[in-house]
Length: 105
Image (cartoon, rainbow, N blue to C red; front, side, top):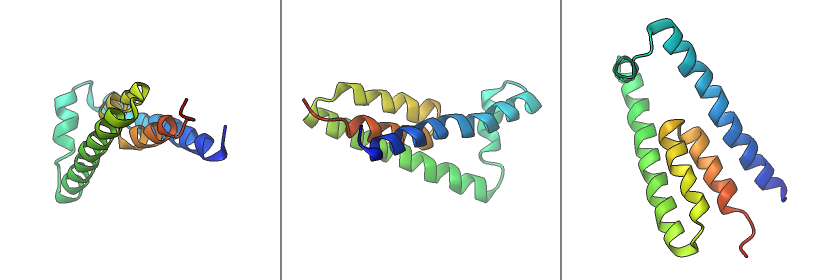
């Protein structure tokens, strides 16, 4: 496997584990309410801006994935879409790059 694929895979794993640590810590402190977490994303202008930044990035990544899957027929790459929305762009983007960079047969 080429070195860049290893880097993408490592970033996808890091992007899944590191943010999840903070999400789980927040849930343990504040209760397991998804609506309370979403409210926390809009607590001030800084977090609201970051939330919108990541939302726009996630939508852009989704459009890119769908457009490329339609051309390349790399259906496995679609797994990056739920990874993006369930974990985050920090996992979804490097996961997609990892899946996209595999040799085409």
